[in-house]
Image 1: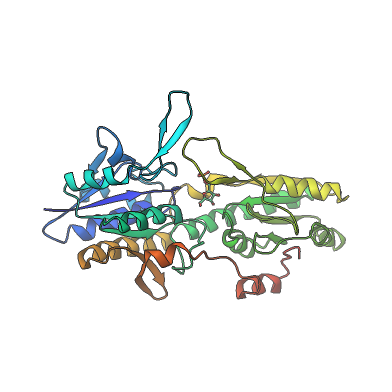
Image 2 (image 1 turned 90 degrees about the vertical axis):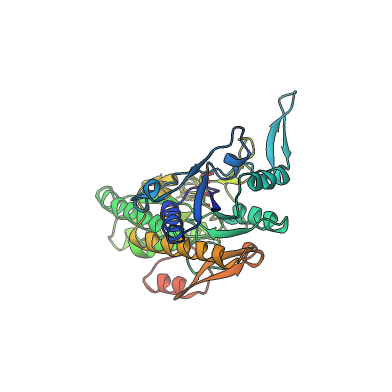
Length: 364
Ligand code: F6P
């Protein structure tokens, strides 16, 4: 019997379960393969006792409809930076990658499929360089990887953000308010841009197009001047004014190295007030709602394609590669190329032109 280990790493993302299910269902068509899930990314392998579980067809039945991941995930630590507590209460990051590879050999693991974002795929590349038979499956709601046209989870996040805009419109119009919706996306404005167009927002602020607060105020004021006494602003968490900085904080959670973004909606609201914009303003931070709930059909399909392809790459021995979607094909690309190329909104791209064409202001 051959064994493939599946791990989900980084922040969760709608569609992870559909990938897991597809891997298991495709593997079950081979006479000699078993799928093992590692609990909470590679932590399950490194913990004592080991936390893994056999994923057979029964274990994955119907899970493509569920958000989250049935094998858990983490965006802290990892095999190259495992946090160990010192006697004085401080923490040291320890490299346990060799130990993990030995443990995988001991467990009879022939190949690993790592489903995760850029951080997880960097770990995949490092493990590959150490000789591990590993394949990457990209995931992120932010859609910020250029190796693939889309990542699963993105369309679900856009749908949730758009539904939030739809709901805000009714309350904004009832109260003649400006309602600001803050959405995720880290350094990419894809979720904000799609939700602004789909929801018909007046203003869309994204990291790739720094804004001028006066221009934002002018656009909002023009709505009131025209007698349309309300407006919707969609702002990406990584957006910033011209010459400004990210609104972020360093988390004190052990092993968590990402900057925590968030707070731009409230900053924008304060800044508008400070320059004398006098309509009522309220802020909504959509946060992790964007990652929760059931994946939309598009994400289930893409995730299923990624799952089937990744197992077929195991059969073909395409290690050190990552699954990617290049319309209309599902292909594989070297991990090393994939991890270093982010996908940002080009300020002059068609989608931005479309948004401007329907009167959306970027505050520039
Ligand atoms: O990368 C996905 C993402 O949801 C970002 O959009 C967001 O900034 C971040 O993860 C939030 O991470 P966490 O779940 O650790 O708060």
